[in-house]
Length: 156
View 1 (tube, rainbow, N blue to C red):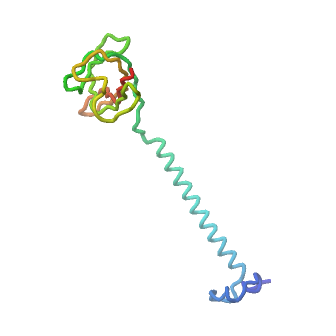
View 2 (view 1 turned 180 degrees about the vertical axis):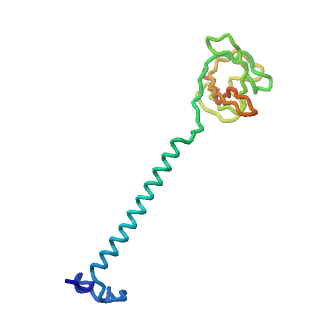
View 3 (view 1 turned 120 degrees about the vertical axis):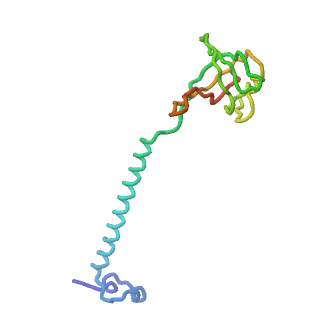
């Protein structure tokens, strides 16, 4: 048995005046609701698929981060301008030159700094026991790879 929206659902006449057809059947209302629900479900599936693709893509994209190799040793000489140190790692007889410009540094009290020169490495000094964090930059077509000091710790 078919009925109108007003008679089957006992909707007062004032709420049904927006309807163009007073004889709109209840089955039509449910069909309209189910169609919009199906549309919403379709959009939800598309959104979930796009999110999954985004997360999957981010898994394969290189993450430009590196973990520094930590080396402990002694400074054999700090260049007069304070930009380069000659560093001998513990257990090694080799002395290597490293630029410390732009490197984060930690003072003997444990405070990190992002500018200036390390307080334990004054110009032309030698003998400080430090730790350094090195990241090796891969070579490019025209640029050779090399180790880069990213931090210096005076707490050695």
